[in-house]
Amino acid sequence: MADNQKKAAEPKLHKKHGIKVFDVVNYIVFAIIALIVIIPIWKVVVDSFNAVGVYQFRLWPSDPTFAGYLTIMSTAKLARPFINSVVTTVLGTLVGLIMSTLGGYVLNQYEMPGRSAMSYFLLFTMIFSGGMIPEYLVMKQLHLVDSMWILVVKHGMNVYNLVLMKNFFEGIPGSLYEAAKLDGCSPMQIFYKVVLPLSKAALASVGLMFAVTVWNDYSTVQIYITNPTQVNFQYMLRVMIMDGDTPTTAYKVSQNTLYYASIVCAILPFMVAYPFLQQYFVTGVNVGAVKE
Amino acid sequence: MSKDNNSAAVQVRKKPLKLRIWNNRGFYLMFLPVFFFVLIIYYWPMLGIRYSFYSYKLGKLTWVGLEHFKSMFGQKEFWLAFKNTLVISVVKLLLNTFVAVIISIFLNEMGNMFCKKFIQTIIYLPHFMSYAVVAAIFTLFLSPSSTGFINETLKNWGVIEKSIDFLHNKAMWQPIFQIINLWKETGWGTVIFFATLAGISPDQYEAADIDGATRLQKIWYITLPSLANTIIIVLILNMAKVLNIFEPVFVLYNTRVLEVSDVISTYVYRKTFLTAIPDYGYTTAVGLFKSIVGCVLMLISNEASKKVRGRGII
View 1 (spheres, rainbow over the protein chains, first blue to last red):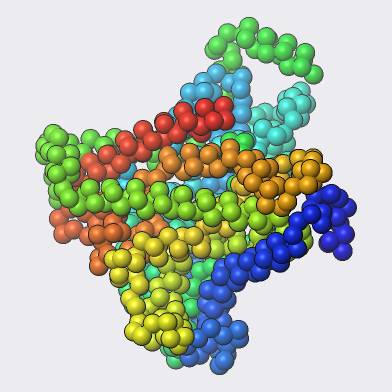
View 2 (view 1 turned 60 degrees about the horizontal axis):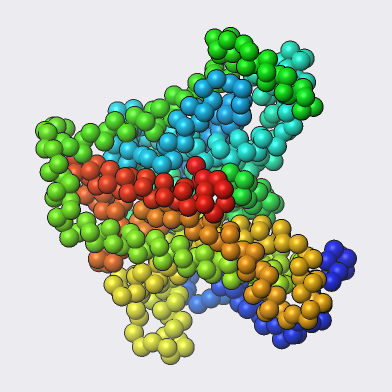
């Protein structure tokens, strides 16, 4: 079926000219590449259900157990960072989307006096920065050190994503703005009645970029946060596995099972959502790189 | 349509500036949150650059002039970090781009659409895992203890006699770092090349077919040249950011391989947060040096980008 469609779409593209060997080798090599990528992930998932920490690669757990996951859920020291991660990711994405849509929308107003100054104001931050230490000192003054809200503040404003949003908005036909203006809509009304409803794909795309960044951030937590109630899951995972700082738990669970279960929890949200949202992830990259 | 636009533009230009500003007040208001956010997060820290010329220890500021820069340039540790930054980032960039190009070209040759999509989906996957997770996975796999997947498997196969402590080995750390990064990011790196490949006109391949070109000839004479521009752009865009590397190294390095793994950012981190009495002034100075070099690289890349594709990157 798929083959037929393909043939219909590109009839003469790859005719019998090519050596058959080429195709065979190609498929084999890519099967190997796919296995190289998938085996580590699969092993992590399988071992997270495995009661005994084994080194072998297995397709299925030999001694299935949920102890790893139950431990994470019931141990405050592990569950708390997970909740922190969820909260900061949701909030960070929300703030990020608000800022990038507002900024992107305003930067598209080419008749507005001072537009290019605003644009330079934003773009300058992409070529120069104060650096890690001055940033740290500012955050300290803002009382954001040792608070998980630092993740929302640090990632809530992203000039690159803002420019991406602006590029997406440029695809909206100008006549729609004009029509809305003639109907007496204020800029704000045009924004949420015309621009936002037409940009659902862009919002999904940029929103996912924010979500991935915040959820996956580890180094910000490492730099800014020491209070164990404020850390996120990535940090917890890191401390547990690399520094061997495993919290005491009520469950009897082997250390490795707990490790692998934590890794699965840390990658779960995007692994589950990813196959369905792949197109949005990809659009973001292409718009950013090709149009910019 | 265009006539309407023109007349509107002329009208706007005729209006006095004050009126135009007033007419756009809604937009300014909407920009305000962005303005303050950027001001606080990005511009306020820039004021902190002045600490580079002070000694800032235990909350006390003393003017030292250019002392920090002198001691920085005189330190072997700093130059080592600078060298490592360049080597690690540049090798990472070239290697990832090279492999991504190869993969996208050959995946593009795959006739079966379902297989192609399926493999794309799989190789994009690791990109969405954090560096902390990837480091955790590979630290567990490469562990020299009895639970280390790779060591134990290699021993079972008889390839090695004794477990190898991969991540604590100076000769092996950089190659392993690059392999792990390749595993994580190469798949995602192909996205941009696929976008270009999708744009190649099938006419070119048809013409080549008629001329009796083989598959490899078509790749060499049609596909590869079509990608050349994209490859250059990817290299230029990333060249500007080579000094920024932090998290990928930070999650995998350790004190035993500092010599080959310490980069500028980790150096700044260590000197600030892992030192008993840190001198914020000194580490700010190192950061400033990095920012300035980064800025120069960015401007060079921008010019290069203008030459190659007619527009800058910023």
